[in-house]
Length: 92
Length: 95
Image (cartoon, rainbow over all chains, first blue to last red; front, side, top):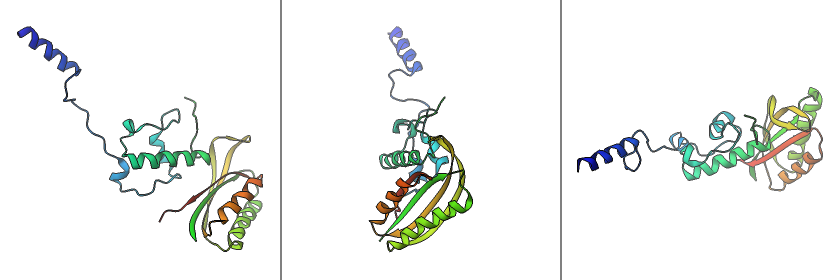
């Protein structure tokens, strides 16, 4: 009995199977917060936050954007690559 | 009529006169096709994110205009021919 309980506690400490993940909060879309309607491909500073060091577009799982805005960001980054404002690939 | 926005990347080593003449030329084409140029903004020289035809720098110009739907095609046709234009991008301005 007590052994079992100990085991469970141990598991929770590691954060393995328990549902309450401490310290991880649901991300909110930055564009929705700022009420941005059109994502501008010229805004390199802003778009730069949604690419990796290598210049790859980050997935929604990491950016926390809503689906509509993530789609808009993707298109904006691609447009900005066309006019060489952002890189297709970057050396690390 | 629709609002368009064209960004063009010109060679950075052009002389100012040639550059202005080029911009005026494209503005003229919009006017000729029956559109109106609202604004032509010169963003100036900027380092390119990647090399284009051995160029590391480009001169960025933004052209805001209202025109018929055939105008962007004509503009892009001419920019494609022009060796001084490194890149161009036309987008429809959302209201």
